[in-house]
Length: 454
Image 1: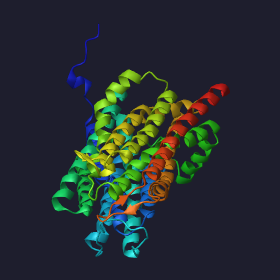
Image 2: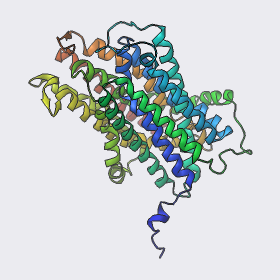
Image 3: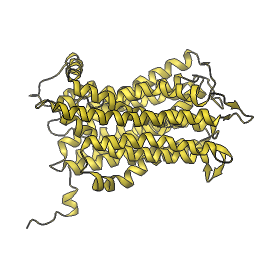
Image 4: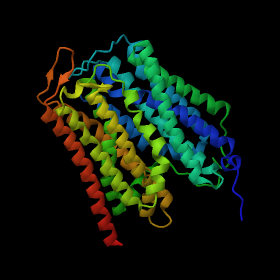
């Protein structure tokens, strides 16, 4: 009978593995320090009703789409050099995001205006920041995941579980730090200082501790040019079943993207003037950390497509609960520990985390099953495309849904908050719910079609 491995043996991984995870922790802390406030910040800078969400959608799109290219580059120049470059880009991007307030003479309005009032002194550094953060972030994910893949010592499940846990710990750490710093100093733009410091810490970990795992640069591996990578997109899109899955599954990420678009706008403009969005959205990583093992144990044997369908239905239904406070006595601003509108948003974010636990973890497994035999690696390289599409569409669509549907007939009150027409606001939440349920139904139809093809 084989003896049980000791705790030390079970969790023994090379130093590169642990240093990669530490790098990921600080990089995720940097990103989520500012992610929950980006649309609010850009709106208060004078970018109007639509540009903040549109630019945020572009940022998420770059982070998810560019790994197709940056992962190929990292394979050729090495993970360490790629991570050092990525951290420099991230520090520069976060600096440029805060530049209009720190050095550009801009002041943040109490509430965002409907029209664009910002000039080139705001638009140029913000656009450059989006590009730098997008490119920098796109290098980190394939480098860290690649390190985990090459250092798991035959314990891939455990290694990636720790990696996923570290992502969420970094997310919590970044949000908490940003909350204390911005509330202590009373300035929203200080969230970018937190992001810069966390990115610098990630740089130091890479520079002082991280070393490329063995075969991080494989001279025998054929090098792919950028043109070959882009042509690979067309190759996988020629697979009808992959393309159809990419379209129907992007609905999940369209809804998920509203955590950082519609929810911040809704709370900031209609519920409270100074919302703690960093704390509210922290319900997502906390829920994942607390329930990941339990959900895996109870539902891990569900077929991947069924698990993804359940997760998509959950994320759609999570939006529906926000209808309740609209019709309660006192409305969304009535208080029970938090304003009712904010309390239900926290519940929404927690429910979305359950959707992630069912769907996100099974996405790669399912895409691998869709790939033609011998092309699994190629298809998995483009597995982030549904996330990229959902994010790119979700930004502007979320802004339109909030401003044109939810805020239809809204009245500005003396304190600057909007008093919503409950029926109009409920219509917006119901539309999001129906979109999520429609996506789940589309996935079910897709799976039935695929079974018939087989």
